[in-house]
Image 1 (cartoon, helix red, strand yellow):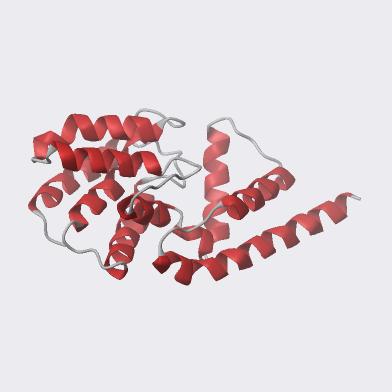
Image 2 (cartoon, rainbow, N blue to C red; image 1 turned 90 degrees about the vertical axis):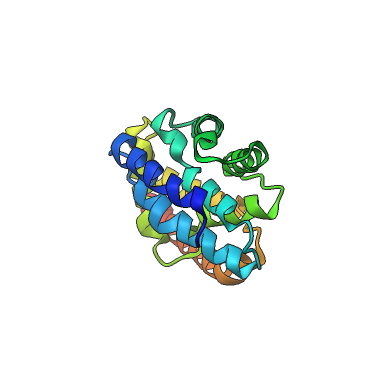
Length: 202
């Protein structure tokens, strides 16, 4: 994907993420943005037939977690503020920045996308819910949350994850077709683990 603005912005953002993201972000570290959300956003956007404004989606994906350098629980708001402050330096227009800010804000849980661009980045952000590596990443998220003072027993964590996956929905046709069945399978597996745990307590 070639776009001058995005290509200049990316190394600047990568440097910030490398230097300023807390090392206890086991789930939301730089790998989440670079290896997961960026490539997923490009893949979904292409499948959804978007080419012309791909750089807008990719910028939203690149910045969706930049706010973690300022705040853990209000990172979307911090990310939108960052976009407003720094994107003009990279020749992004005011109208483009508004779209990008809305993409970042839409990823706040519970997700609230209103446009296809927002839907794409939201789906990319939670793509893992319908993947084989869900349980590995789930444990990384739990470890990360414990560093933020949110501790869970195994029972509480399984219950939390069951509720989260049951409430979640994919928005794009691409992700519904690709990830929904596996997500349903992951919910069943979580419920089985929960039942086994409950039965050992009785």
